[in-house]
Image 1 (cartoon, rainbow, N blue to C red):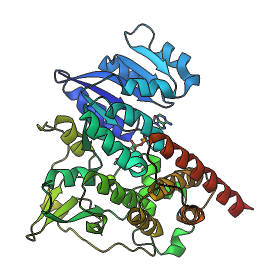
Image 2 (image 1 turned 90 degrees about the vertical axis):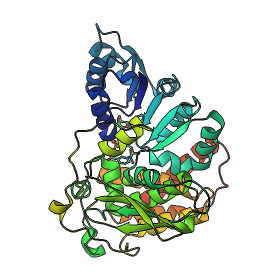
Image 3 (image 1 turned 60 degrees about the horizontal axis):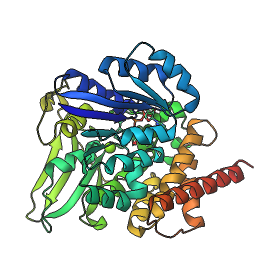
Image 4 (image 1 turned 180 degrees about the horizontal axis):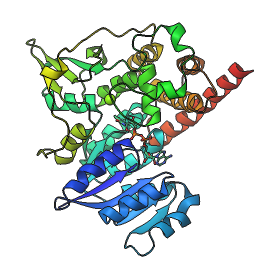
Length: 384
Ligand code: NAD
Ligand code: MG
């Protein structure tokens, strides 16, 4: 029996994880489930899985969660510190599926336990990559990549130094792959969250539409697979069948393929180093017929260029990029700024200042807070 904790259990990745965990009740026992505001979804999942504890991030909803779980054996807690405590309960396997840098402290708490950490929450690795990798090394925690591209690379990657010549991350290109910048100017949040191949949370869907998502994934790959930033490439592949590739020095290229269903990489991380069955649609290449590939367009998708530059510059740049992007995406989703403003705001914040490279978790948090303030003031100036 493996004990399982899911941070962000009510989200897209969280519910896909629950779906797999609940299919094998003899194999997995749920320790803790957390969510930010969805009391009903959290309580229902906690009852179904007989979780030991359910934690709601929004402290104002403590009473509501308590009532929703009345009469069950599930312990109830609320607030951000309670999520961190839940992450530190030492489950054998933890899914980090909170969206944004809000997931960083719970991720660090889970890493400190020296167990398996399945990482979907890419923003934490983008902003605090070296600190997280160091924490995993010192506790002996095993980082298992869940992002479909990184999970694909993980399945194809031989870690011996000197073997890998390139890592190629595939990108669907998002819903505006063929649009001109002029057409993208008027994009609405509803259009941006409608991804052609994947069903995902709102923030990552917008990131896919700007291609910032692929930029964040380049930085994520840099921390997970230390081959050098100049060996990481992006290739647009609209069908999302080839999930990524690893090229070796002899010219061999290994790829992982599958239907675009996050339960495939999640199952890989959940069963690793074993495998488990999933109900996911089998890949029928004859039905797919044709796989297409094209080079990314850094002019129409400036967010990708900004992330690439932040990766090359290193230091605090990735944390600034991520914070400015989270702030701008939230404003776009709230209807406060236009689609093209997202990358413009990130560029402006990056141009404004250059904090020192973070050494500790609190350095990262301070950089994040400051970059969010700067992004907010750039937006106020744009609005005036
Ligand atoms: P989502 O918006 O569907 O779910 C987010 C979860 O985080 C919810 O359970 C929510 O309650 C919780 N949450 C949000 N803000 C919080 C806060 N401040 N404190 C505590 N909990 C909070 O997002 P998602 O699409 O499931 O994505 C989750 C993460 O996984 C993101 O980092 C995303 O980039 C990554 N990811 C997602 C997919 C996908 O297919 N959805 C694929 C690859 C990577
Ligand atoms: Mg991905």
